[in-house]
Image (cartoon, rainbow, N blue to C red):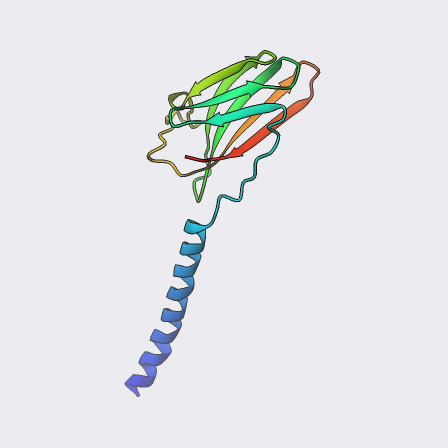
Length: 136
């Protein structure tokens, strides 16, 4: 009798644990799922110390904002406001310039990152966006 009760209790728990482990492994080991897009108008180059943003749109860009997007369960990204970027201008943005809305600075050691996204608006009012996967 005790053996049957243990089988009823342990069996579903073991199955649930196995499913939970598979989900964690799938989420943790899965790729970022981010593909490069929009880089014909805005160039993004990520190195170990900075993010370089290049305006290739042919016009000056205003309201330029770069965001380091988190991977996993973290919802808040790290943002750096660049402001204006003239035609063919490249701006290097240090990782220390990226912050969360509450002021926490970005650290590549402590954050899991999926992509870098840059949004801007040209002088004609057309919106531009570029995304590159995190490659460090």
